[in-house]
Length: 433
Image 1 (cartoon, rainbow, N blue to C red):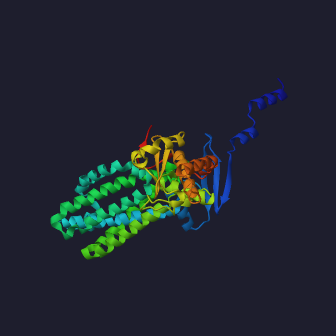
Image 2: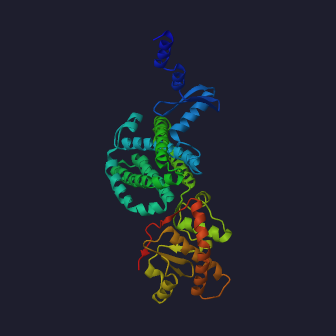
């Protein structure tokens, strides 16, 4: 073997250094956005790592970004529906005032029981009556779940008002120490009902904001905000308890003020929620807007128009429909056969009265069925103003008109984000043939 052949064999054995260099170079790049330079690199396992290499932003901007990442859903604001920021702002204020009120009430309870109400006691002691009457209140309120599904906003406001009522009784307990057990027990009973109502309405409220299937992320970040401002509120409560509210006169001034802010916050919080399920009020508002203008309203369009305290009001432009009365109280036996034949293919019965139109749904009727009945009632009410035909004839004409517009109407509702598979009528009566 000559020298030239040996050199060739050595080259075959040695790996190509240039090819090794190409294989060892990692896949990485830099991106600069909003004065922040980031290094992106794929790891051998395919995972993408990100590292900030230069951040020329002021410290304030970095703190804001860190806060948003910890307390707001990923992808905010594009991952949630309209109103989430306003909802979150007032939710924070609500929890702040609630926590401060809790400290004041605990301090007053300790004073009424004969203990010296120092701030340390107010924050550490867990009052034993909460394990008694509070559980009774929870059990009673748990039976109202169907109504909470239908009107989550109303029950959320009711929960906070009831909680403040119970807290107020505790604050006032030193004024009548001989009735300490009665006032403390009633206060905890009210707070127990409030806790159940608040927790039961949490899921439909968060579901209204979930835009990308991110319900768990919304829930987790919402709880993070609640926890943060509860801690801040406790600190403020301790400060108030040791200064302004060290006397009963101070509590009587500060307590109602905090309660007013608390209830106002939860009302504004609920007004910002775009609930996209159908109940009586929302269905009536949708139908009224469609019949009057031909426009289909979205959940965000209706949120500030909802009556949160008295949602059962009858809307004349939607046919003055009332849902949920028993069938035997609504339809006379002499008209039952005619109505059954007219709505033979439907899951509702309409009975027009002097002041309103009763609609009774079948047991398995959906939101679509309820909307069909509502449109018939609305068109019938509009036709009766310019016609003197018998009511049954008007219902027939209104039914035909409803059938001609319902398919595009339903498509428009779904495009706007409405859930039409269910109709939430609380504890309304339904029938089954």
